[in-house]
Length: 491
Ligand code: GLY
Ligand code: MN
Ligand code: MN
Image 1 (cartoon, rainbow, N blue to C red):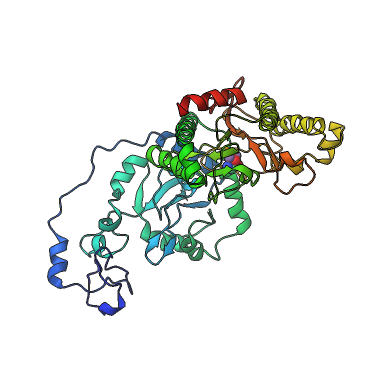
Image 2 (tube, protein in one colour; image 1 turned 135 degrees about the vertical axis):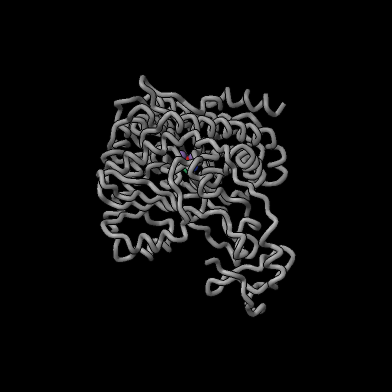
């Protein structure tokens, strides 16, 4: 039986202002409207079912990924939630971004969705997607509920989703109850859906749940052809975003780093879903702060701009690219000396990326070059072997030289040490190579003219059958090429 709007104290509901939904279910009921209005809203709507929907381009890949997951955990019920909206304040929510595991296994990105792999009699699983159906028009949900389609937009119907995603779909509002009553072992990807975690509390074991997340992290280490195509799209949009920024550097000088952030964000939103992480738009000494995302400082001629930014595609693959640019288009001699050392380190790092190489090799190759330069410049006492052994260069190199890249900027972060950091590179892996040198403004161990200079160069490198391919090669890296590229763009 459908619920009907019933009289309620109007004072208990939010005031029905111009754009405020008379929403909020209390005790499972919607607030009071007249019977006449309820009836008036109920009918007279066209059938808008979309009958010719094609499967998503990645539907075959998501099926293959679910099959791999099924093989790893025979006989167990596996639950992978998309996550829920998070409140920013009152009835305003943060933008929703589906959990990576859910999007990877389904291709879907809607809030509240839950993928369940039900153990099947043959030892495999039946995958079932639990999602929100179209809003109910009979009980007024579509216009009385703040998440009704009239307020937030049309959703796919269950049968439309079945065609798009290649999965049987059911109403998610029954999922928690059904799962709580189900028999047998359950594993849940935690951290996305507190309601499900509560419903399954007592059935779950943190260590076994962690194994599920680790497996899904490792499953994503090698990218398939669809993913590589998406990563290239993310990088191509990012290249255009960097070009946009160079063209407006004069306006950034007149305002702040925010102009750079906003300019890149425009490209990300027009061509993709979002930025894949908070853009680092670090001018002058801010470049020495590794995750400078406040972006509220001045942009000055004669200083460097370190821009670390990436577009995330509609399918949630992100680029992660850094360029360090002279704001006025020309490096000073000292800026160039430091930049060229980082460039040389990055060249050595990229050259070490190939199938069969240890993951650590590219980091070691880049660190060696940086240590050599630091010794040569007299900033640290040699020999280089001693510096590397003691890690003394790290005062200025600060971070690892890269990481896996994919749907998360720091992708596959839960993979075990033996498969990732101590592992071996394979074709289809995609990683960043991003050495840097950072001389803090208050670093008394370096000559004054070094202080406040930070340089990082970061590219997205795909491991291929015979070496690697730089997906972000369209952005110049060598200092002279950066200068001529900037001159061209600034006209
Ligand atoms: N943008 C963060 C990083 O480069 O890892
Ligand atoms: Mn980065
Ligand atoms: Mn990175």
